[in-house]
Length: 312
Image (spheres, rainbow, N blue to C red):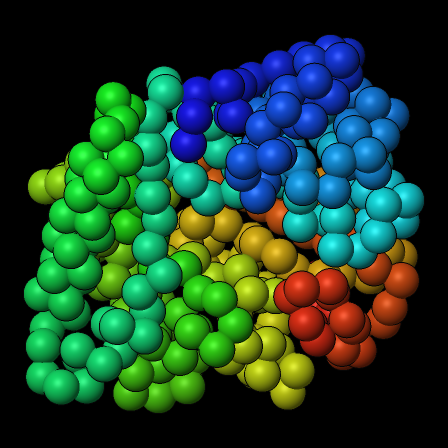
């Protein structure tokens, strides 16, 4: 990531966003802007205007009402999929290549890994999870340095975010079940995910790591999680209850647009309390949609995703 691509800016500076976006979007796929303040009208306009721009905000209590307003307005005015492009950070926005809750710590290269299937295969063939994680990380670091050398770049390697992150069929939920030896959310789930996070934390301390370095379970990005949610085995309260123990946040979860304000504020307040207890930043992406709980909606590139009931 390049420093300016994740520059913290004040929302009224729409001209900066326009000029920077039009310049860099020719050479990158997406751009992230951490916000220094929140103006719902301007933010919604920016998300509507720049479809490959992501935005994040560090939570403050005085922003609570406006955050709730933005969560309602973005899907309604910009489309449901646009809800994926705004995230709230409970705690300081971390240096990470994961969008949308991201900032940069300087000009350089950072990377994330899609390596769940690699881990599943190695573990199935008898390797320990910790050994498989280290093997994958060391290979990734080697490739990163080789890429910088090949490009004759003077950019520094900022680091890797070693988080276990899914993408559809490459499912973190399925990997947790493989280690657990039982369906997700049966007894042992919390300790299994906690163990994986302990291994990630230990590995991150020994390498040049940035970001969350945790198990990530974004509902709309993980096919196994969607399967479990569709049959009622994975509920909103399950995802929320996992957050203080081990996962990076309540992420990519569609809920009904009729959800009461006090419920939305309660979720955000719970996550803030979890952040304080955990001592680490937590990201949140909720997508409010005009559908009832249990309905599977089409969520753009994320495919069919079940709507969860935030009261269950």
